[in-house]
Length: 111
Image 1 (cartoon, rainbow, N blue to C red):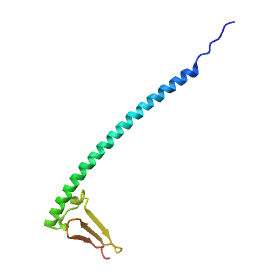
Image 2 (image 1 turned 180 degrees about the horizontal axis):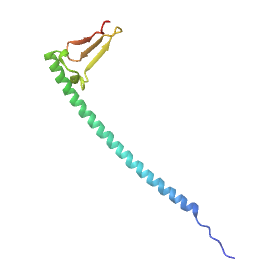
Image 3 (image 1 turned 30 degrees about the vertical axis):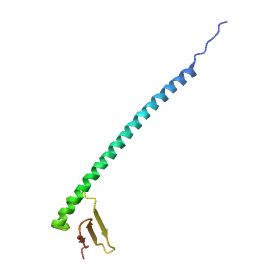
Image 4 (image 1 turned 135 degrees about the vertical axis):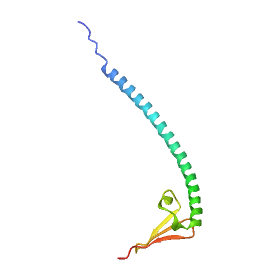
């Protein structure tokens, strides 16, 4: 009688799964490192934007103080971060700019 040797399927499967786990772990590590780098870049960009916004707001206040807030265009306000808009229950919209002592008031049209 001859002895039949069983093929070690379970051991081969376990080895394959282990290799897949190691590959996935490396992929995750690399991806997390890239994400951390992206967050660092985003933080740097946010700091840069904040610096530019401060300069923009100062120049806009300077200009509005010279010509009046009502002379500013919509485009002038696009990137301004020092704008305060309030409204009343009657529909009046009041537009203020921090650092400027005037306001623009938009009254609802009367029918």
